Length: 243
Image (cartoon, rainbow, N blue to C red):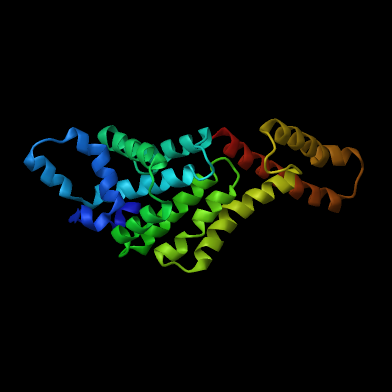
């Protein structure tokens, strides 16, 4: 579904939005002059508020482990261009919000609470956003403890059942762990080691190799299943490490 579904029309004041209002003001305030323009700052559209809250939360999550790495930068670019289809001024606004928020003094919880105020009438949109947070956290294929700590707070802030976290964890974290396990490598292994292990296992379980050894047909059928599993695990980890 589109994440825009829960954003209704209407204006929101800075007093309602707290840190989000201040964040937007810090990004666009320097370019605004005159009484009429300043008045627009006091009541701005829900989409502006949503964008600010969204990218502020993403910024705090990306910086949770102390730095924003290249995989996270690429994931943010993907969110901007592909998931939200932002370009021009909208793209620049999102990036400026991200850059400001990642280093400001406000907490992840404060921005997430602001986002909940904006989208509280649309739990489905909040659910989509929560999944985007998981995607960002797993951009490098590993869930850092500090990132996980923030993700665990969302169900309480968004008024979700804890099972929502569990389901996303199973989808994004447990599945990735199983890929590493299939290839017999550690989660923090460099891609060169992953590829080396993949090629070794691929050769071991290749049907032609096993047929040449004169093994029973039943064993070969099982080996084919394992071969496919190895291939799928490698392809998924390759996608992660190419980001």
